[in-house]
Image 1 (cartoon, rainbow, N blue to C red):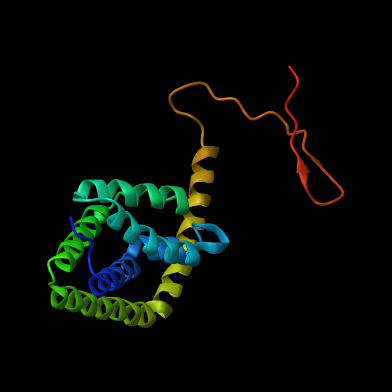
Image 2: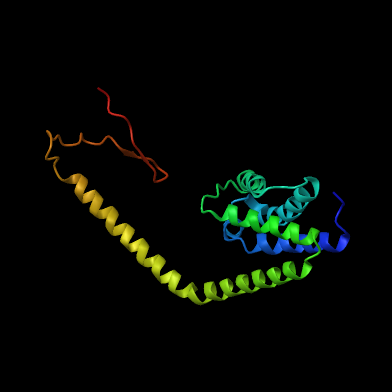
Length: 187
């Protein structure tokens, strides 16, 4: 197999970058720091690693690329991707690579533009829904507190299915620093 020329090779790299930058799973991992302090740098490195993987291996199949991406996400971001997007991203990467090899740069450029537009639209939607997300977050927190209080009330009710015994008196002692020390009851 002949090595691709410099132009298609650069175009493939742009396609990889556009695709990975618009992949929600990777973006969530970066935004939430799943890869540690250098999550953004890891995502940028991933672009080069994927490009190199294609350049170093002839005739890659989508399932091979999928395995490679899954391994990268697991190793670099402690993330197991189970939403089905690995298959889609892998297939798109293989398509970009084939198109670049066959000189169909126009199709790759068009796809890059679409990915950039989709990413921009997602940012706009996220920005518009931000205030609503904050209020729903507060509501969810209140609901969680209510559910927790309700669960505590339920656990205080006697067990209908068997004998009940009241909990033993606690031997908790409060330390100077405000922590409560809970000790096991001696038998």
